[in-house]
Length: 209
Figure: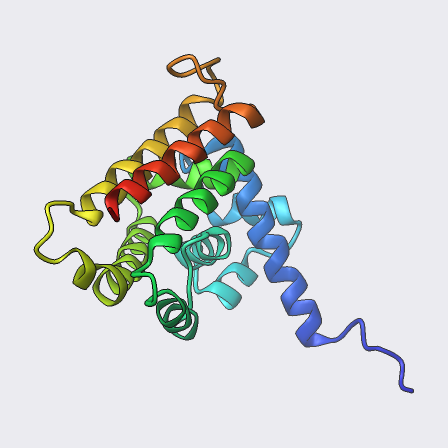
């Protein structure tokens, strides 16, 4: 059996790209977008700044790759179609709840994800706008293919319900990091999160009744 190749141009390239992505993440988490530049990221990664242009086309390309590797809403076309087909039987009821739970867990467990949500709201930067557009495109496919027919003509609008719940999860995950409780619930604690998840399920179940 031949020895596993652990070095070479392709592996070196991938390692360097990952170093740049990781270094960008550290800088953004610590300092945000203020003053961000190629030289700063390259110095953090300890590589030649020319490699940012070679591998990513520039700073925007690097930021885009960083955001897309971290975003929990990033689905390929094949993955999206699979999710759609798997959730048509119950008109997406289980998925409507599970997506909320996954989002809450992802945001509570990752400072980077919370930062990305904050940047998406507050920063005027094209890769962030593109990320938000792609989230909306995935969401639109799910609504149009799984949910809309079930709720057509009914007095409950799942799009509006999900919008309220998702924005609530955004706020709770951000608020809880620097504060104690919200409405008397310890959002950072397991018990508090369990109560929130229970209530999310109750709301989704109500929407489908």
